[in-house]
Image (cartoon, rainbow, N blue to C red; front, side, top):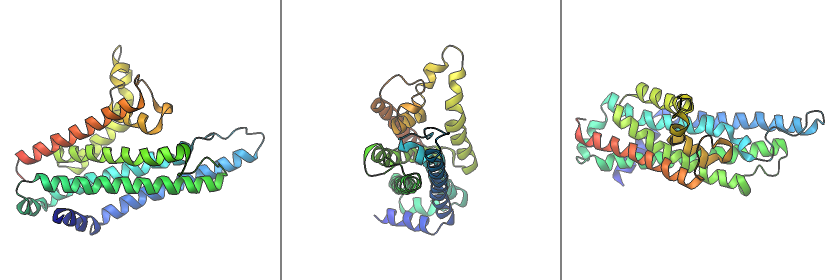
Length: 254
């Protein structure tokens, strides 16, 4: 508990966390407003036809996946690498010589925070977009909206575990963020272009599997198994990355 309190004090006294979490929620809500207005306009114009998002609430929370989750992961990376940069981790490891409880406490706190921030963004985005568009199905408390409300935070939490593992491995904010962004935004999408084996490899990309479990058939891509096997693979890779980061942290100098 003392380590959790210590980590909480660090978070609440660091401006970067407020900015990243706040910006993630604000951008998600802003995009939800735009989408809600677009849906309202499209629904009222007989020449336009059916709204682009249809009845799927996923259309209303595009900003959560595009902004909130990414910025929550960056906040976790900065929290880890910032301690190595400014050497504040030495005091933490002196207070906890075995190190792993300190790593576990930080991971637990930022995982929960990522889940809470993501859940807040999902709820507000759906409520705002639903109110503006008049879509009755765009609600976070039933149907597909409730499914997304449950799955997006879990996806964000597991991703936080993975990126914190990467941060403990690399110890550098710029390098970790660059690698993470290239991996999630470019590499996983481009690997399918490799001749002959690309599509088979693409099916095993962890974040692609996580997206499939979170968002459903619209992002299945080249994955041939079901949603829950995809979730299991994504979770396994995330925990494995964190475990590697923990082992490296235990074995090398602070």
